[in-house]
Image (cartoon, rainbow, N blue to C red; front, side, top):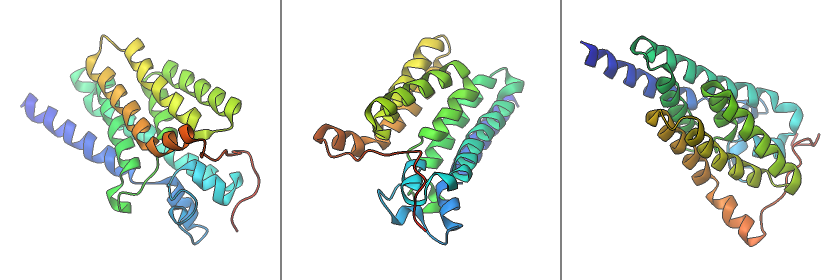
Length: 212
């Protein structure tokens, strides 16, 4: 009976979190402009590409959706695992699969974002210390260089290190944290190549312009 409950909890957490990840804020917000953010710029369905094309004023909905789905996935998955005394493990499981759904959304043709915004809120829910640290690292990396991608990659690496430092005694949580960090780094592989070659464009996240 217990094994059945565990299996059902795993299935609900994985499928539910992945489907929540398919709700992409940038795609939803761009459709309010009768457009698809993925047809512009880098083709990525993330906050940075959205701001580049529509401006910062329209970005609130993107943040609301991508942050909200991350928080909801972690809380629901944690609730599913709470009766087994594994709430933190449930949140880590939900966090990974909501990010996987964001990066590779089946309902959107597997063309999603890169997971940084969702990852930040996953970290804040699981362990606020890690969330605060990666936010500081991202801001420093971006503000000192002007490259959102560099700040994102540094934050992703810090994400994994944070889970190793704070959750080494909880292997399930630690390894899912490392997996989430690796996913974000992988999603930025093109940016890393362009950074090395000096071809990566800088981005002003506070600009007021955007597509009409």
